[in-house]
Every structure is written in C-alpha cells, then in structure tokens.
Length: 561
Image 1 (tube, helix red, strand yellow):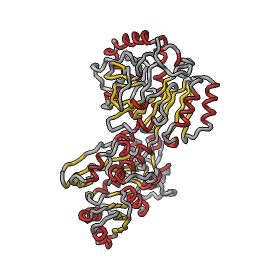
Image 2 (tube, rainbow, N blue to C red):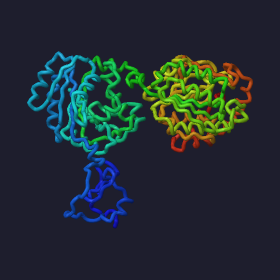
Image 3 (cartoon, rainbow, N blue to C red):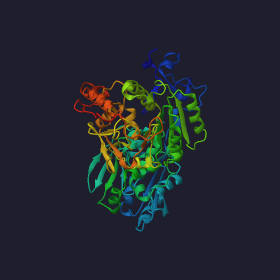
Image 4 (cartoon, rainbow, N blue to C red):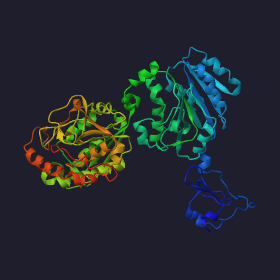
C-alpha cells in the first residue's frame, strides 16, 4: 500500500503533521507517521459502513483547538473613534465570543458610545488606572475565551481578521498570531513584518503589534502580567513585554494574512515623551533574565575574590542563570566551588566540569602556548552556545573582578544596533587595555563615557546570545585571537560593540595581584604582528556564513590579554 493511497490520512492544518481518521485506528493524539501507515493493514479507501469500536475523542487538534475569542478594547478619551472599532468587531466573519470595552480615566463620551452596543453583547467597565498594561490585565481577568485580542480604541480590524487568525491556533505550539499593519489617518501605507520570528528577533525589537491574537494559556503560564510597568512604558512598549514573555517561554508566533488597521495621529505629548524613553526602559530590561557564564580554570588564589563578587554583585540574583564551567580537573578546587554553590542565593545555578586542555594552561606563558589556549577557548565557547537560553549572556573570566553594579551599567547601553557592551580591563602583556579600535590599535589610556570600539576581550562582556550562537569558534583563526574573530563576525552582521569606560575591572595575575605593566610585552607584540600579516588570507575562515570581505583584515597587534 502506497502512503498516498490511504484516504484516512489527512494533514493537520498549518503543521507538517498527519492524522488518521480511520474509525478503527487509535494512536496517541491521533497523529501518525509513515512508519505507522506502512504497517497498517487498514490503510486504503474510505469504508463508510465501518463504525468505531473505541475512540477517546482526543487528539492534539481537539485538545488545543481554539474557537472562542475575546476582544478587549482599552479606551482613554477615544470616544470619537470607539464606534468604528466596536463595529469592526461585530462585523467579523468568525464572531467574537466576548467584546469588552474598558474605559480608563476618560472625560469624554467613551462610556456612552460603548453603551450603545450593549444590546449586541458589548460589555463596558470603567476603571481609574491611567495605565494600559493594567487595563489589558483587567481585560484578561474579566474574560474567559481561548484567544484574546487587545484592540486599541482608535484602530479597527478587517472582517476576516479573527477567522484567518484562528486557523493558525490549530497548531498547539502557536501562542501569538500577528499581521501586517495598514496605516490610515495622517499617513496611509502598508507596514509589513517578517513571516517568521525567533525569540532572538523579538528580543532585539518589536515586530508584533498590540492588536495581535494571543492564546490565553500562553499569557497565563508566563505570568506576563505579574510585572508592573510605568504608564509611559506601558503605552509605548507594554505589548512588546507581553510578546517577549510568550515567545521566550517556547510559544511560536505566526503571521496571518488579514490586516490590522492602525490609526496614525499628529505628534502628541505621549509620542514625544516616548522618544525620550531609553532602550533599557522600553525593553523592560530591568526585569531581564541573563546568563552569567564563568569559565573556571582552577585559580585557587582568585576564587575567594570571585566568590565574594558573586555574593555581592547587584543584578538581581533571581534574574541570573549562573553557569560555572570548570575546566580545572582539580578535585580540591571543585570541592571549594561546590561548597559555595550549596550556600549561594542564585535561583538557577549550573556547575559543569569539562576537560578542554591540560591543567594550569591559563597561567602558562601565552606566547609558547597560544595555540593550546585558542583550542581550549574554542571548546569552551562552543559549549556555551549549546547551553545558554536567555537573550543576553554575560561572560566573566575568572581573573576579572568588575564593579558590583557592572551588569546594569552594561545593559543600560544596549540599543537595537548594539551587539555587546563590555567593561574595560588592563592587559597582562602590555600597558594598555584589552580593547581595540578599528581593528588596528589598542587603547593605551582609558576612553571617556561609553564609546563604540572595534572590539574587546571577553573578560567582562554582555553579548546578545544570538551572536554567540551564530559564531563558529575555532582555534584555526590566524587573527590575533578568538575574540578578534568574534568581533569581525559581530560587525559583519551589522552590530556595534561598546565599552563603558566607567566600569574598569581589576585584572589579576596567578598570584592574586592586580595587573600592572608586564615585561613580556615586547615578545607578545612581535608575535602578534607576525600573525596580523597573515590575516588577509585567513579571514574567510572566521565564519563561512559571515559574508565578511577580505577588506576587514588589519587586526590589532597589541590586544592580547
């Protein structure tokens, strides 16, 4: 029997799965695969006379299919537009199960306008929040439908908006269904969005408008409303916060074909105020969970300093996923680390032991062991790629001690085009910093404030996780080191790197002393200069998919850390 000849196999809408409708076949969730079908003696044409002898009625489609929709309309002094919004809800090809208007601090006729539609099932409640995030939360609490749409009172939705959107929720993985925006009012244009979005895409900027459809279960399970937002942030990017929580928790966002009609107004006090809101605030980064990744090489003299920093650093410990990556192979050192882990107050701590090189390699003369160090670092950071799940990863090397407030001071300087923000520290091998400019020269004296740089050592750096996961770390680079290769990769993807010079770190040697100037500098510099002359022929090895041209080849000769 060929698979195509069985008339009981049907595709599950909007997925790559197949289900079986044969009345005598019972499989988990109703989902079948080619192996099941090839061995099934019941496969073939439909036989109407057959009746099911056992059927539990459950399948992945029936368990997760969403059919009811609640439309919640927050309204603040938009009575003049409200009727159009409500009428668009009533004219849907798939009728909304609930339509709720929440009038928030309005002194116009919004309540009276909404009450005109009471006979058609539209409910109205009045609140005194002055905060659209709280209004949406109230709408979530006041409704019970499977799917929710938060429709702004000055917008409207196309007649097929609910019908086409609901089809995507047949896939139980879908938490959000978004659409393109048809602008109207002061401007008229179609704003399109990507057909597919990843959590990393959405962590960088918002592609999903406030009037998208969202699965109630997704909002509930992610506690998306548990965080209070300032009124201006709530009005400007409160929806972004909701969508990020949903997508970062594993739900999928899908795009539908119907359009959401978005009204454009003249410049208002709110829009002008919104322009002054920082990226840190608009992205609600104060509540961001980040991964803190610390490669441990077994430096026993330095562990007490690092342990003290971890105890006292000020980014909320419950918002850190701490990964201690121990490559020392030292049982005594391991016991010290495990003892601290048993008493620390980080909510999520992982301790990983991995052999990547010979013990004590980190403190061997770098010139003689450069190749071994590169191989070890490539193994470490390729391992990091597979275990990090947050949108940002904070890398802290075990011989670096930053200021206690460093995490916030780095995160505050991200924006949509920034890929990493680092804290500076002095080199062990020359008198400058492990920071370079235009890939050619190290900073010998500190910069001012926060500046764009060519790159920096990983000693204390917060990076967008997507950039780390896209990178193929290798020991074969003929660039001065793996961090140079990473920043070529970062720049090739259109991002910039920054250093916050006000966050200078202490860099310690193996004896536990703060790094000053080292006499090894001349030998190291000479070795690096020889390496940089070979970078033109080797840059293609940085990342086979980076698209970097051979023009970006002149690297820093003084940046070894």
